[in-house]
Image (cartoon, rainbow, N blue to C red):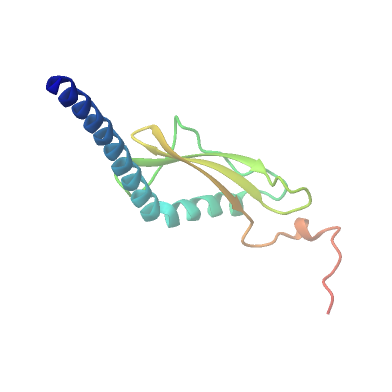
Length: 128
């Protein structure tokens, strides 16, 4: 009887240990994401600003990711148009990779930081 109680208790403690390790890894990934987020935003903004008006920004594949300043971390991005019709900008489906393996998915809306004349064509002038 005592042996069965010890076994059940031990198995329960092992389950809690696994949950604790999982939470620790999640917190570490969140901390790394907070460190590299400004860098990710800068990379995405540059891609959008360098794209020609009307063209989708250049994607970043998992096979050739952009390396980030944090050792072992990199970025892959797939672009989509803004889900709100008539709204400017793009939606970046970004993946934060650690040693080539995805650890966090990010959906980041990005607008062009400067206007091109072609974007202004056909739009009414702002009221004065």
